[in-house]
Image (cartoon, rainbow, N blue to C red; front, side, top):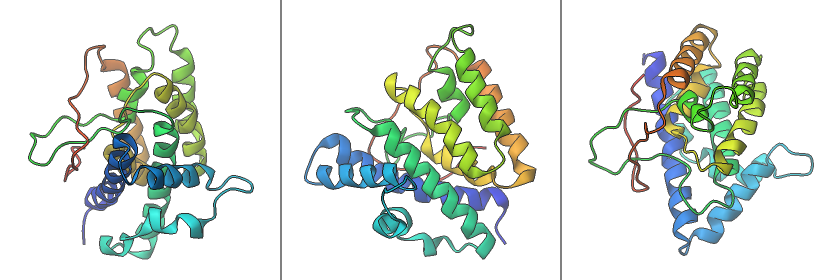
Length: 218
């Protein structure tokens, strides 16, 4: 049986592959741009009153999910992490002409992964001005379920969008899976806290739109 982190990595790689394809189509404004815009719009409306239905976005979210080979309980966690990750990306990329998701080109040397805490710090480095960011991070940690976590994360994602701060959605999807497991929650938030308080202003990763990364570096 695969380990907890191996299962989380499967979910994260599944999410990143979908985001890479959406981002490439959306940003490059080629033949698939209109479809990518429509997909992101449906994802933003998913779960909203009168918004998109699960059936209308099912293919965008879940096509290929059976290939993950997860158990019933793990699949439920995976579905939640996938939906939350893609909805957050849909808000993050909205109306932006530059990539909001970090990706790596095939064959590129592995870059150190950046947690959501690292991205939060890049919203504002002045600690006095960043009190609101930290309050929102604390609200995420206090949330009792994935819906609450996603709700509070969305406010930070909107700030990141406004300041063109990227997010490593591979690691974010992995963390959203792990946050549904009580024994793993503390490790995730500890890593976010460490990355938030140790990030430097020039601590920026090289990024590419071309491919995916195979493994999480938790």
